[in-house]
Length: 314
Ligand code: RRO
Image (cartoon, rainbow, N blue to C red; front, top):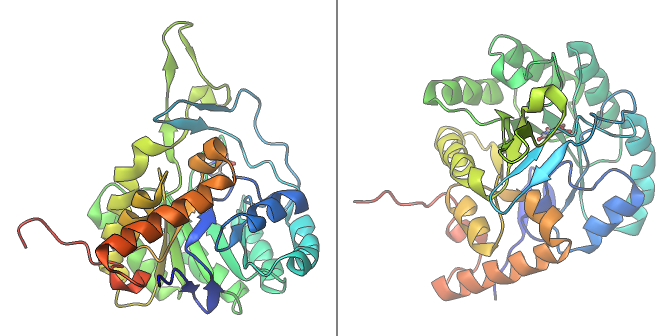
């Protein structure tokens, strides 16, 4: 009998499959739809202080390999999500994870404080939205980020905090950020956000596929999986003795992908683009495929293989 359950901080999840932020999770019907699927928890769309409509359309484009988005944080504002969470919790026992992003230091603090006193189970602090014109990602500012992380921690002492980070393409960056996570006592990290500043070109029309930010936007989908796995494995090796957990995200489409992320050290995984493409059935399909792989390999729990990737030649 295979046990897929996992604990994120002290929060119990029946399985490690979570919708990525931004894929549904904006209002009660959205949240319940994801809770009724074979998910382990539900993650809200990133919330801001004020309600937002997001960027101008077209702001999303996809093919089999890629999806490019510049959605621009459409959401109903944090007060709305805090207000509906108790009602959501009457309708489902699944844990609720919120996501927040501040446009300033002070806004991050306000949001962390408010969610600390709310019914959500875990807070994902988004330091890595690539789609706000004129606002660089906090996660790439190595002087600002540690101060911001510490302030978020102080503002939300009672909830598990996960930092949503972008891809880091150099080990020196990962080392600095791992130290920041440990120093500021975050419980976890979500890796990776979409690859910012990406561009897809329509050669036929000689135009960009999307409109905001000169056509530059966040890349997701199957093609980014190797970058995501590299970041999960890289951070896992820096964080494994600290107890800081990892949610892996980026290009996960099937149970085999889930297996690979856990093998590289992920505690749980998030499914974004594949949820858009395949609908709620994607979670049951992935769960069944993961169980089959584990049965074939004789594993009975995720701990049997988490972080146990072997290096060729060992
Ligand atoms: O809303 C978005 O455009 C968005 C966000 Br907040 C994010 O964190 N990552 C992304 O790819 N899109």
